[in-house]
Structure formats: structure tokens, C-alpha cells
Image (tube, rainbow, N blue to C red; front, side, top):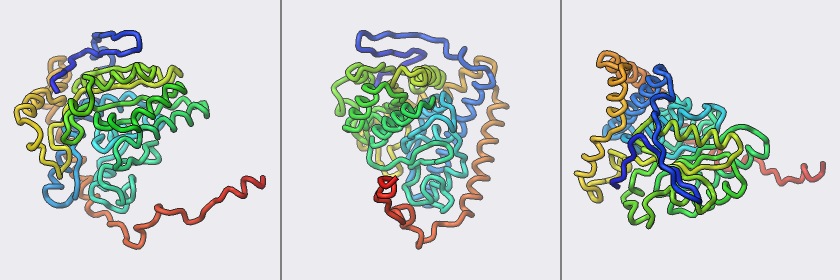
Length: 358
């Protein structure tokens, strides 16, 4: 994958393609720009800690987010946390942090503790879910959350709510029927949903060239009658601006958008993956030079909003927050074996007869 979008976005429609250039830095105040950076910094630091815990044998499985922080943080920052509904995919550490999950809750999931808000320690780590935050639990089969998002968007429309549904997935999910069914249904019914694809160029080990015969995921959008937007997924401000535009469009009642963030994962697919078998090390080096975190740091320094002392202080704060969360998570009780089947089957079955008699 060599395409790289710097400060621009391509908008695909059924009629034509439009390329726009924006000064994304004018979208947010200096305070909010630094807040975006803090979220990216926390995401990176927590991701690194979980990876180390896996290597120490304390976390059985890890799905790293390194390299995709800008796509995750920038898009989630455009949502109304606790109001809009999000369906994250397992790599979305930055998304869930911005939307309100704490490092403690993330580590409770990673360590499979009883107080894990996602599943009480039942799910694989990083299969996020949080009822209070309106974040739906994901499952391991790839792409199943996409038609679910269309259904949630239909429910929101029927209830006349102004909430927007944002569903996240990787480029590999676009090879599933769930992707095409979800987009088609959402477009037909003009539903308030944003389909956010983090295209890192690989479906686990399969490169994009062996997944699709088109250069961009957004090329699918015109066939379903919705806008398709390609954004530089390593530019947090560009991601924020384009996600905000898609969310506003959905909230106005103008229907869905397919938003493709071009990015790259800098670590293996998971802690069980050997990416050296399918990726050229030179390719990884190429993308490390385009790491979104130092890139945004350099932009903030150039704008006079950040210096080394402030940066070191922000990193120390993030590390201290993670240290405290890890102590508390490791001290948290493990799930009881006798409760393993709770929430799997219904305690009582409602056959609907009571409703029919009313």
C-alpha cells in the first residue's frame, strides 16, 4: 500500500470525484488540539503497556493499535460521547478511550477480570462493549457489526432520535457479505450511519491487492448510492474534520457515508501473528516514518502549542494514570467459575403469549 493522503480528502459520488484541500488546524481551538494529542498519547502508552503485559504472560492475547491512533482518536472525537452509538472493532483502543472507557476498564478486559464492563471477563480481550456509553459489544466473526449498525440506525430513525451510529471495521471486512448488505440497506432507507473503514492494507496477512480489484474501499460507495470519502488516516485533524462532516450529514437526515481512512498498523496483526512472513521490513520502516503520533507532535510544536517540557509532562501523566489503573486491575477479582454461563442463555423464555392476549 503506497497511497498516502496529506491534508486532503477525496469525495466519491455516483457522478464524480471531488478532491478538496482544507486547513484542518483551523477547525479546533488550541485547547482542543492539545486534548486530541493527549488522547493519542494515552492510546499509544496504554497500547504499549498491554503489549508488554502480553509478553510477560499476564495478558493472553493482544490486538495492537499502534499506527492507527489518528484514525481512531480523530473519528471518535467527532461524536457525541454517550449519545451517539458506536460499534468499535477490536483494534479500536483509541475510539473506546475517547468515548469514555477508562484505562482501568480497558485493563480489566485485557486481564479478564470479573468487573470488566465489556463481558465480565468472558470475551476475548479488546472485544469492547459498554452499555452506559452506548457502545455495543463486538464478536470475533469479522464484519458482523456492519449490518447491526444499519439496524440500529433504522431504530434511531423510527424513534425520531437525533443519534448517529458509527461502525468501525478494517479493510478485510469489506470482503464479507455483511459489509455489502449493511451499506445497501442503509442507503435504501437513508439511515443515520457512518461506515468507518480503517484501511491498513492487510486483512490479517492478505494484502489489499488480493482482496479487491479496485484501489480504494470508498469506490464501493457510489454503487450503493452514498458518498464515499477517502482521508489520510494518519492525519488526526483531517480524520476529525471528515468524520464530523459525515456525522453532521447523518444527523441532518441526509443518510449514510462510507469513510475510508488510509492508515497502517506498525505491529503484527495480533500478539499471535508473525508479520515477518508476509510484510517486507522496508515497508514497515516506510510507515514508521509516517507514524501519526510524532507527526502531530511536530505540527503542534511548529504551531507553538507544545514544547519538550509540556510533552514530557503529558506523557508522565498518561503513564501515571496507566500505572494506577494496572495496580487496581491486577487486584480486581477474577470471574467465578460457577457464573461462567450467566448471560449466555435466558433464565426465562417469553413466548409472546402475554402480548397477544392484550
